[in-house]
Image (cartoon, rainbow, N blue to C red; front, side, top):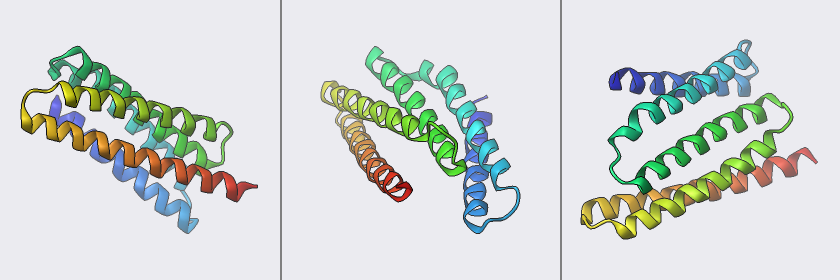
Length: 149
């Protein structure tokens, strides 16, 4: 089952990226590909929630995994809404930024509590990556909102 979940994630990302390229090039079928890719990505993230969180040990790790998966699902939906010019896209992206911030903070707290140095450095690096992603999303959101006015 784990392999099938990983394959679904790869397929979802591929379909979403191909749809994005189609949208930029104004090819037909872009809307369908973007929507299918985003919803397949959301299904992948919720399958991760069902299967992946069982492997996490502490309550803080499980909470971080759940918040992170939900935030990433909202990121996917927010960017799908933004690319399709549907209403509430900015709200979804803003909510996802708050979720990513919370995920980064929880992961940083978990990194400080970790005793294994390898896991500690990996969690700190992942937390830093989440913060960088959040900053990029923040500036992309500002640029997209500024270009609409």
